[in-house]
Image 1 (cartoon, helix red, strand yellow):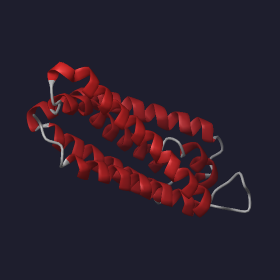
Image 2 (image 1 turned 90 degrees about the vertical axis):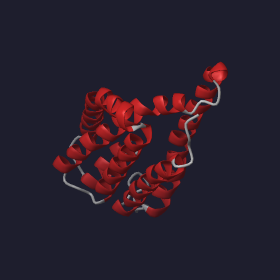
Image 3 (image 1 turned 120 degrees about the horizontal axis):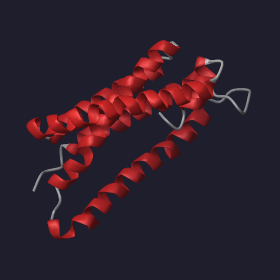
Length: 175
């Protein structure tokens, strides 16, 4: 979402100040993530890591679907809270899960480095795929603007990615 929000606010929502609303969404997401991070960590200590990650992925997928339906700005800001909550849950449990599945504590730093690189690849590859799709599907007469159909595809791809992440987690097992 984050790589495309400014342009979606400009092209689809047509807000007066897309930079302002992009910054507001970012702040709402960060505050929401911060508020749930510690409780989500405690919850994962009692229920296990995977249920919290599954819940966070489900919530983020719902947010992507919500963004795809071009909601009014007030609902968009509410969805920003949802994204922050999902992201905060995920980030608070992500490395705890990584520590639980380390093959060896003797090589913990190397294994956590691999874990971190895989997260980096995911956040890098997403926009590399979604950007050309936005350009292709969302093409308009203006080369500087994209249609809502392009953003719908981008948001649905985002939902697909987090659903895939949750499904792939089924194959991760603690040592």
